[in-house]
Length: 525
Image (cartoon, rainbow, N blue to C red; front, side, top):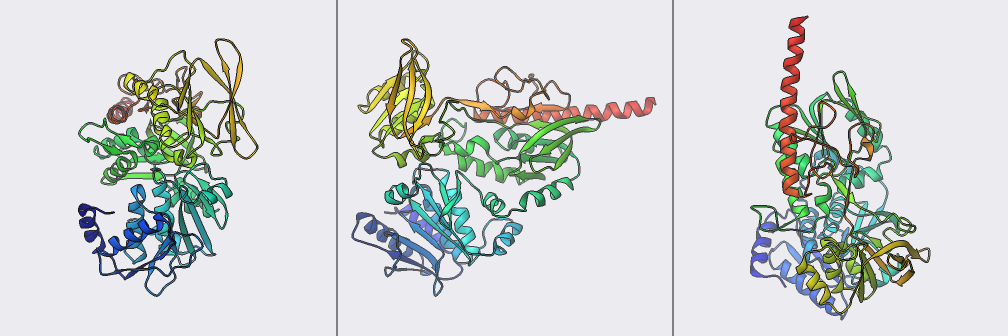
């Protein structure tokens, strides 16, 4: 199963194993069990410190555990950890052996101090690029704390559990049998969710910070770029981010980032984060700005937990989010059939009927991908024709299990109270309303800027984008903006990075000129 290159890499990784590890498998006569045993044996062959046993008695079969020899294992993989999850498997071996994780000491200590039995189960799909972050975070917690267990469950293999727990989006996490969370979560986010006093603790730390020279709100490509340019100028720089990486974390394939032939969103974000950490940038992650006020000395930024940060200048780079249909039933059935990531959630709809809303590149690409998994795809476009590139349309129309409906207005998501079972739409030409019976709806209709919190503070366009000039300046002196939340055309990663650098240089120029003006006023006085 593993090629020679991977085996060579594993040998190098496994030299870091601290204490001997045992992989204990619970198997049956299925093909998956056979593949699992083959994988485990090939992995174990790369290190004398790894042993494979086949006497497991887990309830979930096939599965295997990762643990120290002579101790009860706390990390379980109920499925083949291939694709994106191979890294999760390798890290589990290293961390269970005692190899120190690349996590801040404060986070490690908080994990070790947690008390009470915590049994996490994470439903994943191997095509999900959000799932490994959650799996790796919970595996780390299980490796560090004997009261914590974690089971990764491949939904494609355990369809009975998927149906039992009505899992319709991945990653989905259960804690002690009850719903805990959905979507990407970092270890910091999980800890914050478990620690009910976390917001108050964070607020105290944030309130104690000195004023920044430049505070960047948003940790995507534009924000990361702005922070590096600012820090290189030697000024006090901070990043306030609801989620470092932003929308890029949800991007699968990136093939137009110049000088990098191909990469994935999470990998690019990891590289951005490492680059930012090379400089003296105060990164305040998992924090959402709710208000911004101009003061005599600069700006005050209020955070959701009540803390207030001060800065002489501010760069807003809050990016954008998926646009929603805004029809009845959409919120009620979100993650219960209504989804926004076909790569992540598509495998959960294997053999089922789904709809894709949107006829642009994203919508058509989603329909093409899903057609290889589901029984039938209905693509619905508001316009009279599709807007995707011709090459994508040609591929779409070549598929026998795809129906394209144009000139249609989505009116309502239908369901049985538990999950989606249909979509009602209007034929815009005849005004006739029709219903499509289906089990899933994937919304792919573009992005909305994350600027609602700035209404009345700075000039916004009709689309809600922050109006900026060629230097990234806004209608408020000292306030700059960059990236997908602004009026800059063409929402691309590489453009956002350039805009972030530009806004940072403009902010630095503003600070210099402001200080000169203050000195001149003092002399004149």
